[in-house]
Image (cartoon, rainbow, N blue to C red):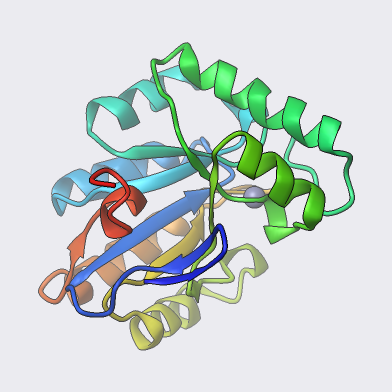
Length: 207
Ligand SMILES: [Zn+2]
C-alpha cells in the first residue's frame, strides 16, 4: 500500500485486485455504470458530490443495495486548498449528514480537484477521514476520446490500483462516454483482477 500520512494512493501490489472510483455523481450515466458493474459482478466506490444528490436519491439507494461504497467528495465541490477550516468542516459535515439519511457513514474523502493544503488535512484528521487519491487517472473530464482513455487505463493498471473516473463532469454535464469506457475495460481486466471497494482494497474494515 502506498500511503503518505493520511493520503492513500493505491493498495498492495501483491494482490490481484483493483478499485474503480467514480467522482462527481450521481448523474444520468450512473445507472448505466451500475448495470455494467452488476453484469461483471464488480464493486466500485462512488465519491459523490452533495449538491447532486437531490432528485437522484434512488441512484444512491441502488448503490447501497448493490453493495457499492460511497465516499465523501464534499457538498459544494469547491477547491478546498485555501478555504478556512470552518468552511471545510461545515461542507464535509453537510454531506455526511445528507448521507446519514441513507444510513451511510463514510470515513473516505476525496478532495474536489485534489485541491488540498493544511486546513484540509487538519479537518480530515479531526473528522477521522482518510484522504483517497489514486494511482491511475483517466483524465476522462478532458474528453480525449474513449479509445485513448481505455488504452491508458489498460497500460497503467496494476495490482492494487485505484482508478479515477467521473460519472459527471463539472461545467460539462453527465459523462456520456463513461459507460462505453467501462464496457471496454471490463472484458480486458476481469480475468486478471477482482474489482473491490476502496475500503476492501486498502483493508480498512479489518483495522
Ligand atoms: Zn470532483
